[in-house]
Image (tube, rainbow over all chains, first blue to last red; front, side):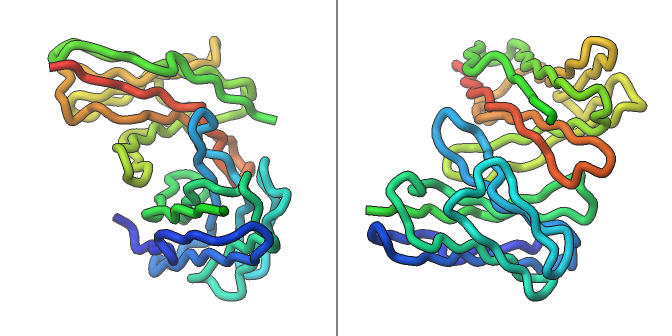
Length: 111
Length: 112
């Protein structure tokens, strides 16, 4: 697997609390992506980054923000978590747009 | 924007038989088509991809075919084995798009 890790791997939180998920890569890839995966919806893009401090929205960005202050880290923040954000979150990296490699995932439960 | 439709959503085949999963895309400018395999509880992993300048690509028991005119591409798995059981995702992207668009996924079950 490509050098990509996610933390935490599991998290349970309460509605209304802020949550930050971290994606860390050791590949020096330019592109980084955050997806959520829910039954029946496949992989849906939340936000992505095409360089340090360069980010853009995906198809399901409402309620999420991201930051990338250095090449190796891409943070996903839920400002005020809701039950609808209970999901498995995957980070992905790619040197070019193609050939994305996924991290191990974070299972988030919002009670 | 690009839209990718994947069929069937579930597929069950006997061990040793072949399996075919098909995806259609909407944007004729799309030029890169990867397939990912996701085993239960694991991350999606790239298993094969094809670019628009070729019509077919093979890697052992798996192959992908592309029909640019009809805007569809397919994953073919021959001599299926129990370890082929997984969810398979197709995707598409075009030059300059900066992202992949994924299909909804196909749950493939290989029956012994």
